[in-house]
Length: 401
Image (cartoon, rainbow, N blue to C red):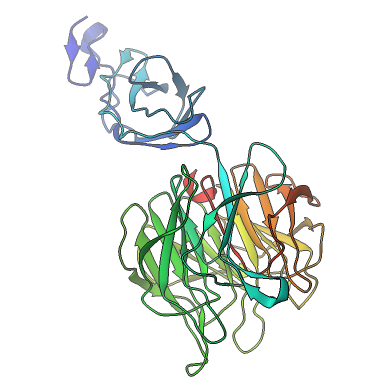
């Protein structure tokens, strides 16, 4: 057979497909997700599948659509990938290679918060999602601080913490980050557009979003601000748009395309759920409602579901609810956490939602659920120190799927 522009010419001059385009890869624990755009010219018949292979040819996988997951990789080793499209007449030429990615253990971190004696802490702990057990020391934040929920964002390589309070009426606009692959102290990233605490965060693999928040004396102001950053590049945040209202103590999580913010407090507790499209700047849109109003909402997600747990004050702080991220609507009961406390935070992998800490009294409890299956939480282990109003970030959350 002769080679055609999209691969090879079959019988009667019919062609294999053109090559896939826009190829990219994100690393996980001993695996990588390879994404691509299907070719517009499919050749002489419909595409029947795709083949992904690493540059050595030692690892590969097939799939019917993007993304394709390649397993069996070695953590800490760098890989690039090519993609082929296949139809009845043959294989396309290989796509351009992806940028290099390095698989690593999927980690969740718990950072900052109030500890014993109402003292702010700069502790960063981490857990490995591959096994239950106690958290391990990762390093320290640049300064001790609290947030009340998840004012943090992350990619597969970086965890980033924005805003917070470093003392009574001492909010900050500082953004700082860690590199998941290397334990150690946080590094300065840049500044938010507005000094504030009790804000929420969500992220895709490339863009981090910080939403809402509060500034105390002399402002005593809630904010409807939405900021964004490009995670791989340090620098100051940029205006994204506005929430539906000025609100603090809300929770945020999402998928690779959609960020969702739930609950919070205006002059009273809120049951509002709202969302944005992460890749497109603009204002938030109504999503639905929580079962009841609540603040200090601890949130996490896989690629399809978002969990809201430890919702404070209104109707019981061991409650977990969930939504299907791609479909607007009201939240649904999921189950119960192992303890009834507010001021917790949540991190997630593609499989597990993990809730840590708590306050009144301060707690070191970590518990978890399997996100795809409703039910009550189970014990995971303990934090290195009991505390609440902490932040969470993950190298494997729903925005990275």
